[in-house]
Amino acid sequence: MALAPDVSSSTDPNPLTDEGRHIDAPGLQYFVFALFFIFGGITSLNDVLIPKLKELFTLNYTQAMLVQFCFFAAYAIIGVPGAQLVKRIGYMRGAVAGLVTMMAGCLLFIPASQTSLYPLFLLALFVLASGVVIVQVVANPLISLLGPAATTHSRLTFAQAFNSLGTTIFPYFGSILILGSLATVAAADLSGEALLAYQRAESRVIVQGYIGLALALAVVAGVVWAFRNRLQGERHETSSLLAGFALLRRPRFGYGALCIFLYVGAEVAIGSIIVNYLMQEQVLGLAEQEAGKLIPLYWGGALVGRFIGSAVLRMVSPGLLLAGVAAGAITLVAVSANSSGALAGYSLLAVGLMNAIMFPTIFSLACEKLGPRAADGSGILNVAICGGAIVPLGVGMLADASGSLATALIVPAICYAIIAGFGIFARRPA
Image 1 (cartoon, rainbow, N blue to C red):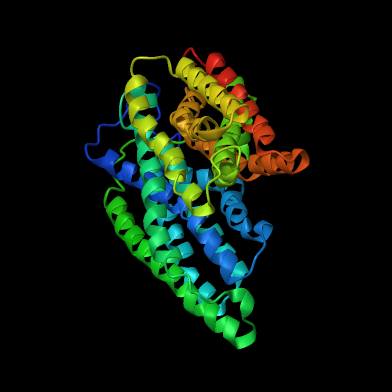
Image 2 (cartoon, rainbow, N blue to C red):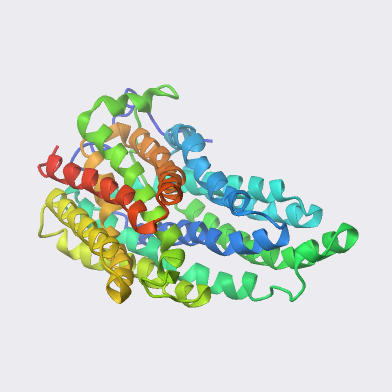
């Protein structure tokens, strides 16, 4: 397999990784948008899997949350090796490797269902997430290359809108397919062979859904493979496995990596407590199902906000806009924590709109001027996504200690305050 040429060997006068350069590849950006849609949707399917597996294996909440832990752990474990792989084989072949790994994770649900072993489901999720990480290592810097540097922030935000579209659509159809078949018999009432038979029968719907995903991924991988030679002059700096961590010494990049960690953690933390928060009598007092129906308002806000943000970022300084929306998120969290009724509920849901541009803007600001080390930077920033497993834990611990979900909202508020500071710090070009 041909390798991406390194800095020393390339003689291309117009390499992809030179500052200010970009590639003109009509049509290729649409495939990148498709990658954002796919890995966003697959990630959000965990919200559907958790209640299903919790019932099938009679799990407590800590055990059920291992679904998210194993998924997000892949970012910490695979981020840097994934960047090394992409540097070795190139962006397009790296995308294919990630898609094939995702297919393998989907297919692992077959033996997991046949054996009715919860740890095997967790392994399948880890492998699936590993593929997602590799695809993200490719997609984020690649979308930056498919156009002028001046519109990178806008382009990446627009691409992230397709990620949000996936997080909105996949859970809806996933809930119909996976949760719609929940039997009237409870696993807790069964034992022995009867329990095994029930688990195998009920987990078949999970397998059907993920086999369908595997087939779709195979089609996308084939299309991307057909485009594998479109990026002429691609170059990456040769470095050791851990060399990417040296980028953290750069104040702009190190601060940005911290903000990715905090942003993902804050977003996941708020999303994780929304149902319980809205069920409280002093907020909306809704039943569990009714509270759950309002979750799309949170994620849908991010979807709408990213389309709006992609246009606004062409006119406003990315750093200042980032500081502004972070301040808006802090305000909404404070209003929610110190009010009651509809105001408390809907102000927290509106934080999704403030979240919209944060990830792509933090990412692009942190990676400015990385040049041939863009893949290294993308790998480190993907490692930082593991904040989605750690920050929510802090929110839960504070809620347990204080006996108040409103008090626990101080954790994401602090995250947003640090992000606002980064926006001000990075308001000027690197």
